[in-house]
Length: 294
Image (tube, rainbow, N blue to C red; front, top):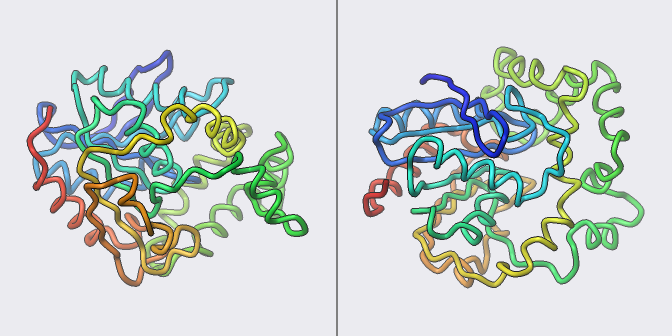
């Protein structure tokens, strides 16, 4: 496994990379509050299997650039598709976990000619809500607003997460500890990687901006929302994920007709880190069944 920067859409993305440069490209997108490091096990394993694997710190995260822009799905996905152009690939298979999963299903509809396949990890392709999602959440959670609602006002979340207790350190320990079935996957050495990334002043703002653009993303995807995803897809769910449950994948075949499903047992929200061997095995089995792509 090696590291590099990729210039795309006017910014630099820090990436972990493995495998031959002329191998079929697999792009791995992490979630919140994660990094390319979250895919470390899969980068190495898929690279050893002959795939060209690239896992970026998403725009605004970690060692990638953090411009003061609108972090909506159009801008973010343009940055990510630009990685394909920069490394000279026409098509890629994209895998996304958590927020990365939200992005890949939009990407599949916006750039259908650039994708050879899609892997959703925990995050299913969800049906479009009748109204913008944050508006809907405000109607549902009136008395006890959930974190997505609390994230909407710029500055408040940053102050809370950066000031409470030991700030980012406590936040990292809380979020990984609360939603895992396998705490041994997050020893101090692993948590320190995330703590180091989110401690600097301003480091949390771009990742939280993704949440602040959820209603904007709903508007931006109006024209493509009804498109089916016509490439072969794999949906990896985690048996014990309290955030994105396997039940949330029900009905996906209506929008993603060529769909294979895998459920990983005894696994919480952080699937590729909690159960790396099972996750890599499912991904490799799917990738090896696809027609060749470049």
